[in-house]
Figure (cartoon, rainbow, N blue to C red):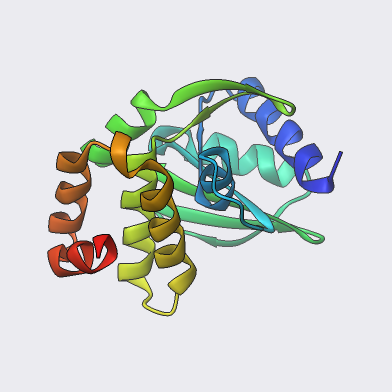
Length: 172
């Protein structure tokens, strides 16, 4: 099993000990939704109220905190990266609550919906236009899941970030 898989197992165990129920987001969530792609770190969405206890638990596991705000945190331990987004806005809280549970080789984990993942990828791109990988992920998710997507929800995300023209462009 890869180092990434061991890192995920360890993180899931830490979340259980912390009484926190995260949802997988980021590149590994893209993979969980059937898109083949490489990634080097693990990204989770957690409730904002758990930020302090998860921060302490990650420090206890030997992670170094590179950045921490009320919205997000980035941790590193040797070559392992772990990023957190904190759900404190109603939309993020809803996406966290609605994340589906799956049995994986690393253990039982919750994974953000395809629509929610598209929303987070869009937010990442809007926050930093050099993150073209996020646009590639959105394109790939559309290609695989277009017929099953809740397009009303997807349109809401593009409207939220004032990017309806981008949605039209991505849909071709």
